[in-house]
Image 1 (tube, rainbow, N blue to C red):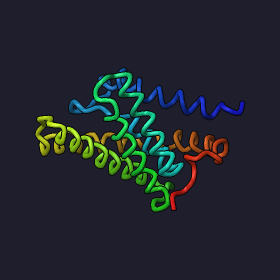
Image 2 (image 1 turned 30 degrees about the horizontal axis):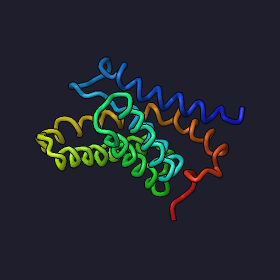
Image 3 (image 1 turned 30 degrees about the vertical axis):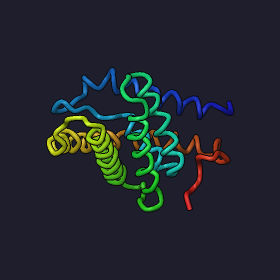
Length: 176
């Protein structure tokens, strides 16, 4: 029973990664689908702090990189950025209103996907940055924000179950 919360968190994380690929095409709007794993990482960072958010982002990103190919570490950096933004908002934003997770995940998506665009640009990828930002990232940010409102309650319950079990963990705690 000791590891039940950890097992549930693992299953939810894998479910978010697999769900993005399997359910994503069916729930897309304007050709854009929500990034369920990015939303999960940002909300877990918000609920458990920046260290946990970054660690979870790295694990989820590496899982995605391993499952779906691409450059190893690319998604890890994107998701770690999302977890960091979510975690940094932990002390500054109240989680009592539904507007909080909406705005938090929108900001987290904007920052993480902008970092992804920057990495693509720096590695010589040819992508129209302004067009990608206006037509993809802005819509994805809104969509992820709406998805976060739906996911906030269950993720908060999960994070409350995980916190006491792993309170001595190196990942839990506030950054100075």
